[in-house]
Image (cartoon, rainbow, N blue to C red; front, side, top):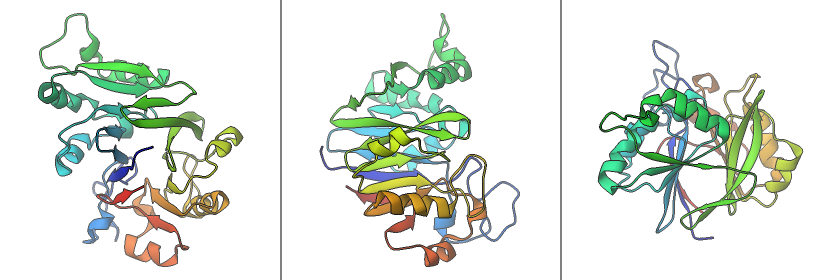
Length: 256
């Protein structure tokens, strides 16, 4: 597996941080680490660039990080905070002069075909996204020189996919890791895991639950993402984290 560079394009929950019309201390914070776009990461090698999820902030994220080339989008699930920006792949269609490949489950493909129906009409309006789908199955799949192993997890009652790439694993929007997925996580050195807030939630891991998972997997490093304003200020929360566990922030770059 080639060396990987991972950029946290967004580390926020579905409403982002700050939340519209909220006057809490976190939403009013001047610490840039407390400003969180919707969760997404960019994975790069020397020859391949892949984005996991295209939420409502996708355009802003691509511009912010000057992403000139994108080989594919890989999707975790069909919720809007992970798919709503798909239309903006058309910029890459124009620049790269080719279609954009989307790696999806059958549910995600169905949701994208419904939400962006104009891109799949028999008679297409000029300038609509030009895309092709590749179905994610249980086995590994390869984009360029990056090999992805799907990691099935549960987001309450909704099946969601995390992904393992070599010694790195990314899991967002989950509150349960099935037994068969635990075995696929064996030996992971760097884990990204959702931790919505400190108090219980129906469909997301809490801070303490995420820390427990990191300990059980014995990761060298765990980065927490999909953070709500209810978590508290970044500077305050990191004071109580155990060694090897960090809260990620937008723009954070790591190499694996």
